Image: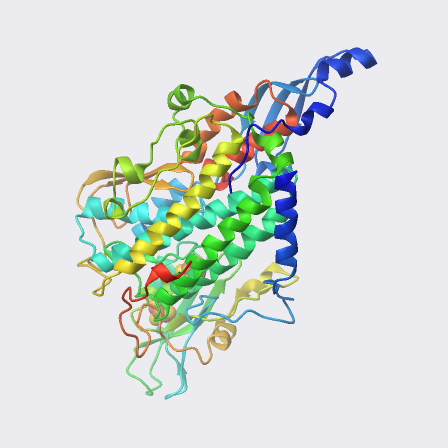
Length: 393
Length: 164
Ligand code: SF4
Ligand code: SF4
């Protein structure tokens, strides 16, 4: 749907801040307030200390760590099947883009151990990773609508996510934490009706995208709430190391799938949506476009899905040689990376490190909210699409 | 105004559609064949005996350390096993339903059951003992990681150009 962004917004009716201060002879003193950790809009347990002058934010100081579980340290802890246990903990850090993260871990481990993956397994991984991205972006759509004061988008998002989760359950046995990818392949082959079900999900996905757009994208109240809010320029975004939709909304066409193709992504035809202004609204639009692009990738992958084995020559007890490997991928939130060090002897990694895009993207929060209203701080935080489990790990 | 009206149109359309929600305890979504609920212990119906030989591999591979078991010498004569499990506890309050214990078991003695409704008033009741674990896995066939019978490899046969 085309959106007329030159439309004079409706907020001309509201009195300006200076008018209110003048009329009622109010005096503004600076005040420090706590937002969170139980605030419903902080997407988990996140605490911001805001220094306010009236309704305007002067400074913001984020406090994290409430969900810290030591996922990296636990990943090193197993004495038996340690490489497998680490995945369980990785899954539970970013609980929304589980499939891409598992994919990244396996690619990294395969790089380290020098394993070959059959083509069919890689295709299935790409399909599931892209569906995982769609799942995460749908969640963003629901949560961001709720941040802006619209509760209905949540229902639309969850109708789509239910379809996806049913598919994940049919493939991996679990709805959220499938633990389905293995070093060198997959746990088991996909069920017999996989292609038909993915086709159905893609169908529903396109329809749901159009509904998402119709419901919210052109809504004037939503536009007034999000346009020009939480702006980060491209230079500043690069300085801060932001990635993913936050960076692309600022105008940098940087997508790891494109600039450093991993897995099979050089075989698929897809676009990288890029914004120009870098505000909350563009981050929202980019995520909706990415859902469509991911659906396109799934369509291509399912068309080309070859027959064949799903497991390579991986040994039963994996002990990679001494050394280290780093693999980066584009997950739903940005540039995700896994670093594994092996000491060559034990069955567990000597060190695992996850480069979590949310944690880095959170650095952009200060730039986004300083000078804005408190209500806009909620939107700016929502537009980063943080998952606190991943920030705190 | 145009965008707001478009939103209303969408709302009316969804209003006329079949609901996607279910009235949960009364109406249940069907579980998928591969659904992984709580892990349970398999019972060998042929010799009417538990399969597990208390080798402890599952307990050592569990990422949450939630399996506790003890074994004893076995000479019941029904099978050739040398050991049999005496006590076997899984703390389902800590279990993450990952399926690793099932995958590593060399004797095919356990399987993820479809049991998932665990609500209790007391956390202690989430520690399932051997009898309850056998109960929840009764009738479950060992299949995790093995292809379904009659499965043919799925290849991309559909023509996605007709989908939209
Ligand atoms: S369930 Fe399997 S792995 Fe665990 S103790 Fe019994 S036989 Fe060993
Ligand atoms: S399913 Fe996973 S967490 Fe649960 S008992 Fe088995 S290995 Fe442990």
